[in-house]
Structures are given as structure tokens and as C-alpha cells.
Image 1 (tube, rainbow, N blue to C red):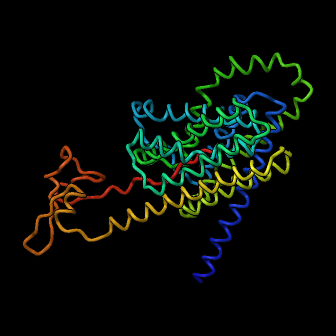
Image 2 (image 1 turned 120 degrees about the vertical axis):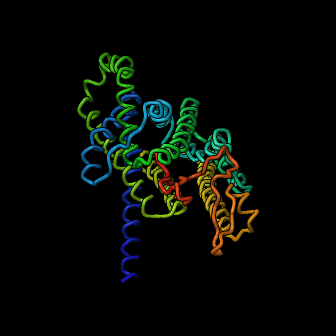
Image 3 (image 1 turned 90 degrees about the vertical axis):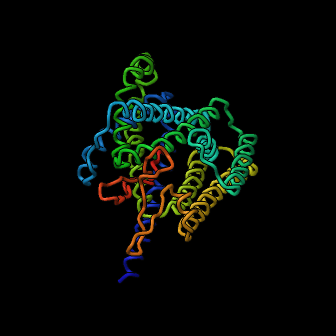
Length: 376
């Protein structure tokens, strides 16, 4: 019975991954086709945000995803609004990169996300990495450099846009984890909130910029029905891609998800080369594969670091090392047990990740979320 249940889970993940690869590659190919005939990346972004806003409400309610949690206006202005701003800008620059350079090259540049994550986590959070993690960044940098040098259809605007987009998504992933931890909001509901807020914030900007050019573009009158169809399909595929990615993440470990995501990138690159027929060289393909190998090595290094940290935490401590690590004092009780004195804290009298109760008991805070919020 257990084997049958396990086999069912494996088949579910496998089918979801196949569907994820097909939807993601279709989304990128259609996006490239759309932007080649319709060079308005801000409009494409607005349609995707509109799709998230329209589809998320009824679908999430049908799935029973909990409603919004109570968030103060101060916190909303401090983190939620900047996240919505980042989502819009990162999406726009992502579309600019696909417009200016081949999909295969844009996705190779996006493999630099671990590099931005490590740098930004160090600067913003003061987070240190292991030597293995830093070493894993070398093949990513070298691979992207080789792909850039050998790219036949190279465009500096496309490269810069892809780098800005990747940095933006890295920042969003870092701060979204904080929002999920602080508020306890469901990750899919946060995606809905950010999409809707970004749509409302930038609707006036889109109206003043792209809308005026759209009215004056006479070429659009001949391809209006085709362009509209591509816009609607692109928006729906983008929404499906986000949902499937979250579904896969909820079923597998972070390392398995990272491998599946890197495999998806290879699939997208291969399909875009096959369907769109972008000219590439052998050295160019080598650079792409080297960068993706670096991403896999990075995720394995991060996984090893988490396992090592977990083992270190589970090892037995003597009283002094336990007190130093956890900032609590252990007091022996008369019945042979231990009483944790929370009144003698080392950091401003606060109890990290918990609540101090009147009966000298301690309730650990289990509301923290380690779920990665993906922006793809």
C-alpha cells in the first residue's frame, strides 16, 4: 500500500514536471513571437499581471486558499508595495531581454541568479556562505561569459535587461521569504496580491507610455486579431507556469525542485533553438551547459550546507555551549528536570522565535515559512 502511494506521488511529480516544461517553453516561444511583431514589453507585462489578477481570485477561492491576513499599512508600504514595484520592473526587463536577444541566451544569462542571491544576501542580510557555494559560482560566471562572447545575435540592451531582471527576481525572492515569515500569508495569495497591486500602480504609467504609441502604430491594425490572441495566450501560460511551479515545489524537496528547475531551463533553451531556429555555435552551447551545470552545483552546495547545519544543531551540547548558542540559561529543578530561565536573555530581553508565558513555559513559533516564492 505504501509502495503504491509512493509510486502515485512519483508519477504525479513527473507529470507535473512534464507539464511545467511544456508550458514554460511554450510561454517563452510565444513571448518571443509576440514581441517580434508587437515590440511593447510593458503592455505584455500588464497583460500578464491582469491574467494573474483575473484568474487568481476565483481559482484560489475554489481551491480553498486562505484569504488575506491582517497587515498594517506601515508594513504594507515598507515591503508589499516595493515587492509589487520589483515584480513589475523585473517582468518588464525580462520581456525586453527576450525581445532583444534569443530566448536561449536570455535564459543562459538568467542562470546568474545564484550569483545575485549570494551577493544580495550578504549585503542585505549579512548571510555568509560555505566555500563550496562560492566555488559553485565560478562555472556560472565562466559559462555566461563564454555564451556572451560567442552569441551571434548579441545585443547590449538585451544583456543588461536580462541582468537587471535576474537581479530584481533575486531581490524579490529574498524579501518575499521575509514577508511569508512575518505575515503567514499563503505564497499563492501573495502572488495574487503583488500582481493586482502592480497592475493598479502601473496602469497610469502604461496609459501614458505604451497606450499612446499603440494608438499611433498603424501596423497593428493589420495584425490586431493575431496579436490579441498571442497576448491572451501568453498571459494564461504565464499564470499556469506560476501555479505549476508552486505545485511542484509543494511536493518535492528544495534540492529536487532546483534540479527540476535547471532541467526546465535546458528544455526551454532546446525547444527555443528548435522552434525559433536561432543560429548557435558549439562553443555557445558549451557556455550554456556550463552555466546550467554551475546552477546545479550551487543548489547541491546549498543543500549540503543546510544538512550540515541541521546535523550540527541536533548534536548534544553541554550546558555552556547550549546557553551560548540559544541565549537561554538552564536551571536544574528539584525533580531532576531542567527549567529554562527566559528572564536572563542575552539579547535585549527578547525571546527569539517564541513567546514567554506566565507559567514560565515557552511556546516555539512554528508559523515561520521556508517556502520559496518563485517569480518565473
